[in-house]
Image (cartoon, rainbow, N blue to C red; front, side):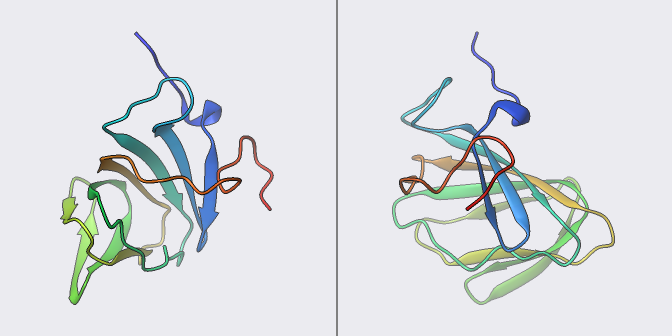
Length: 125
């Protein structure tokens, strides 16, 4: 059995949200079929609109409240909500609550990781 904790994971910061890459094509454990991230978003943080041209993605809200945007659709989400994002659809999420927004995303196939973007430890460029 292979495991990885949030503390051991490479991370990326965007829009006040920190993503921890628990599983992807690189590192240990690794997968060619699935990427899993744990994401923590501060109050009022917003993930920028983006898309995955060749992957579908699911978000599961673990804590807090958010406003999920998928193309022209917007929906408030909270703990226990799953959102499926079809291949190539533009999407983002914003923390609209008072507490941190925490969610897990699963992407298949795994998204491409731009060189130098994900870092270990707390230092960001």
